[in-house]
Length: 182
Length: 229
Image (cartoon, rainbow over all chains, first blue to last red; front, side, top):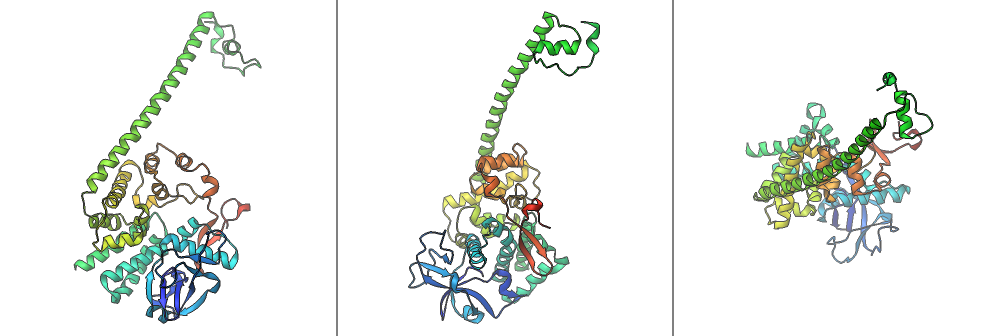
């Protein structure tokens, strides 16, 4: 997931791939975009646009962890899966990371609220995916995809709009509850 | 009364003196008695206007105070439930995302995860969950909002990215309820929150569903008004 802090065999990294780019359908892509984590004290947010500060991230041996956006690279998904995920990023952090990456590669500033609106459906689906797998097992992963795509993609379309997103969340959670009770 | 009383009002003369206007309306000079009566009526209306303002202000204060009491009372009732029950109500019945529940209760997502796993919750945080649940109940009752959780996440004003949920997080729950009930306009609510909202929350980007690129952000076109086509 974008923003995850993972201790890999080649050092600590922060996953920078967008949630939509991490998978191809239900399968993970072979590689992901990551930024290495360095010890770098970012004195203030404004001006240090090549860095994404990660205050509080429990990275061993690094008192001031920060993701170095200048050193974005690809990493094998298998390497990431073999590593230890030590922190996940809150939605607000993900939006900050996206803003800084966009600025780094284009000098365009996208507002955090705009990014939040745009990301909301994806992050909601990621949350539902996690809940589904935790409750029903990894073997049931494809069934969530079928549920979201079913009935002319009704639930996936509902996830896109703030007005209908709760209906989609409710439908999936009620389905989880039904399957657990059956 | 004179025979010319049925004449329609002509455009007032350049003089704005009230007796001149009355003369234009009636086609003849009003009597001293009529002038006194009209002035008395004018003063009475001015007094009534002042009285209505005072009453309106006091009614508004009373309404907001009782609304706060109602929300507090409902919160107290909800807080008797377990955190698991409250979380289930917010997530499964209301359809809120876990990260949204965390934001609205001003806690971390990991705190919500721990509560979901059965770990203990502080009284203050339990009350925050209860208050959110009570607020959504109240929102559903006071206004034509349809799906409360959905309405909560929608922009208050088109082209500005502030939502009712944002204002709730800023401690403006009372104003949000007033808006839902139609007592305040969206502009009123936003003015009360941040007088600079028009410039600070303007949406610079718009979300577009592109058949090839998928869901993307596109910069708004200023010269075309607000929406790029």
